[in-house]
Image (tube, rainbow, N blue to C red):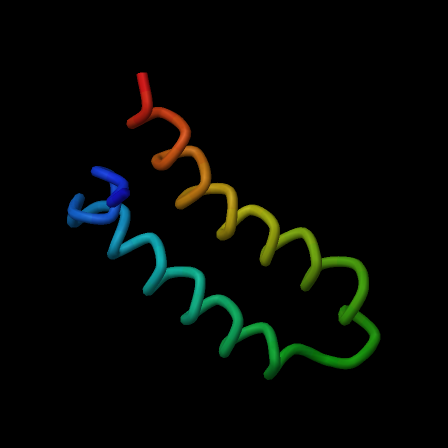
Length: 57
């Protein structure tokens, strides 16, 4: 069963955002590794998750 949200361009772009954020946060100082980095990654992940959740209704 294919999910309809996977065809949405905005969802595809949100995955690109997740990869970009992951790459960028690897350049952050090590003392930010578990504080700011974790929060930014979770925020980027939530974009695609919210799009997927909202498309099911």
